[in-house]
Length: 171
Image (cartoon, rainbow, N blue to C red):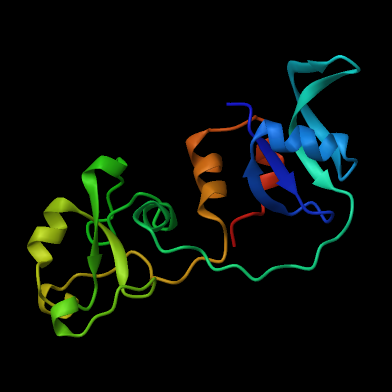
């Protein structure tokens, strides 16, 4: 709780940081506080409301980032939906599946792995999609957005004010 959304100088979401890191950036004058929690932190010479949303004062050279391939990021990319039966599931009832099976030369990559429920994964097994007449819900691609923003938007985590800043985070 009480994490802080860090925005670029152009109001683009960069990441979620701890409130301690956010307070440090505020005290150093590197950020502007846009939204704050009611909770305060105190030092002998300073009282400060915990920042909920902060914006960098200066533009930084963008660092091209690739989204790390992980089970959680994959589930988030596919919106916790089985790409075969098109049903939504909690994370504990999902697994992932290689579209082209690894035994047939398929690689573990964003474009060859999709979210699957256990039932569909077992049914597909080591077969190609065409042999089962499976249609993917959507073509798998490498995400350009940070999955944590999607989880915040759809999971209701974070400060309510974050939503307006994250509305365009997902591309």
